[in-house]
Image (cartoon, rainbow, N blue to C red; front, side, top):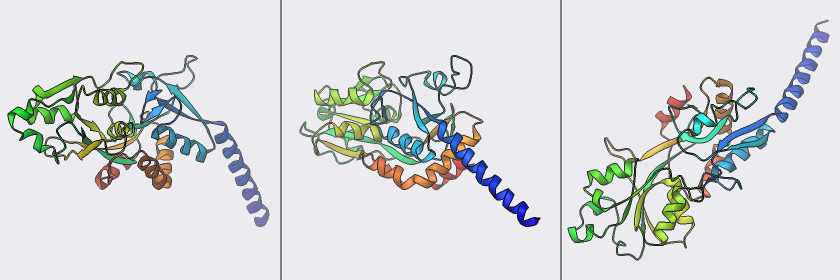
Length: 285
């Protein structure tokens, strides 16, 4: 009798496992993304976030489905937190890249850590610059020739202010509102046409700019964080608050595939730093 009971349980467990796999295979891995945001995501799915999403969907046996929307103000509200038109469920479930601990979403554990970079076009009189403090200590006649991109928000502009270089800044919006160029694309274009000679840009965006020019076209100087001015940040995946089962699933996928994820990111030549242990611990709680 005991043997029969055990066998029955094994059969039932196996049946349930097959059923669960079948259900999961019919589900979709639903991602909220910008269709024109290299190197993160594109509608052609050439961004590194696209590649990581494809990896996760494949491992889950799920179809990868995108909800596309330009990443502007209201992106989270109109994608991750927006209900379907029929009122059944939400439009998408995961944003593949948000700052760890992002206040508009819950977040997975971080899967990489990067820093802002000072990117300087070579051959324009700035090839002697070896670190960012040099810019603040240049003779006045050289400082006046600086053409450095300055965004409406972000640590780069704060650094320019503290370094007394605001007057040399060429203003840009963090969100372009341009249907044909995201910020990185606009910066690449303006560097190429000499509207600007340098920019302090987030690591992945700096990598994209470099990828559009012959190798060795830029001097790359990682910005160093200091008390009161942080340049390096951990990146995680965003999901709806309270979606704990999905959070656990994402954390398990990140743990299982961390080497593959980092290999994907490395293939885009993005400046990366070790993920701080305290950041990982905080986001696991």
